[in-house]
Amino acid sequence: MLRSTGDRVVIVGGGIAGALLARTLQNHADVVLIDPKEYFEIPWANLRAKMEPAAVERTVIPHTEYLTNAKVVTASAVGVDDSVVLTSVGCTVAYDFLVVATGRMCNRPQKREERLQTFEQDKARIASAESVLVVGGGPIGVELAAEIVMGNPEKRVTIVHGGPRLLMVMGEKASAKALEWLRSKNVTVLLDQTVDVAAAGVSPDDKVFTTSAGETVAADCHFVCTGRPIASGWLRDSFLGDHVDENGRVVVDEHLRVGKLRNVFAIGDITDVPEAKQGYLAQRHAMVVSRNLKLLVKGGESREHKLHRYKASKVNITITLGRRDALSELPFMTVIGHLPGAIKPRDHFISRTRRMMGLKLSARHDQSMFRI
Image (cartoon, rainbow, N blue to C red; front, top):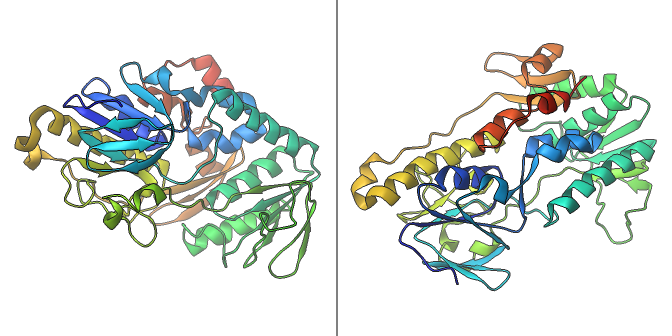
């Protein structure tokens, strides 16, 4: 058992929110990060990495590379009470402050090398395929289809989406522009239909799929880009169970604390904050909780009145459409094409994220990662 030290902050989940919080707190408290993976992954590089696996080398980062003054427990959290977290490897970790940052369910490999291999495998699957099926027309599905068709215009790409329009997180104008752009690139888009690639009788080698509307889609390979469930199941039977809503999200207050508990916070996709679940906003959660925990660790209850508040916000959403184009939904207009594509950095904010994580940059390497 890792015993409490009086200023122990245990962060469960090493995604974009949990990793940044651990990095910013490691010199101000006794930080323990619990994560089933040995690495942190910059999520907005994933889709480009399927086409260029070499680009991901600097975006899949061992936790120990940026956490030089913190402990890392490579395991999943399976339970929690008011003083300790129970892990899948049987180790219990005591805490003074707890931060829940488990986001969405994920089955990525534990080892960094294995994760890098999956990108190589995806690239090989796409390269050898004449046709590709993308299941899901949200931001991930649209961006992946765009990456494939812009890199390989000769490939037949089909999107099957269960909703009445693409990109439901954006407005109708953005959905219409995305649909028009994809069809202009000869991408087939089937709306209000689903494909159950996990159904009995469907194997990874299948090349013919039947949609819920009875349409047949031929594809040499497929990628599932539908939303993953919230990773809060481990909380339901715990003392935090009453603070998990019907959608699996953890209910937080204006300080991102859970319920009225002084020492328990939640950040990232797992929270019930009414805003789009974007990586940029998860980073904002992490910075607010970082400031609050620095106050509490240093001054205890006497600092309660100084706690920072988090205000939900509607951010501008930009969807990358290959290397050159993008779709941006701004407060007063929606634009698509080279202009929004030029505004968004070609390295997908990877350099900025590495700086936030205190990692060294190689300007030559970063600029060449996404060279046109």
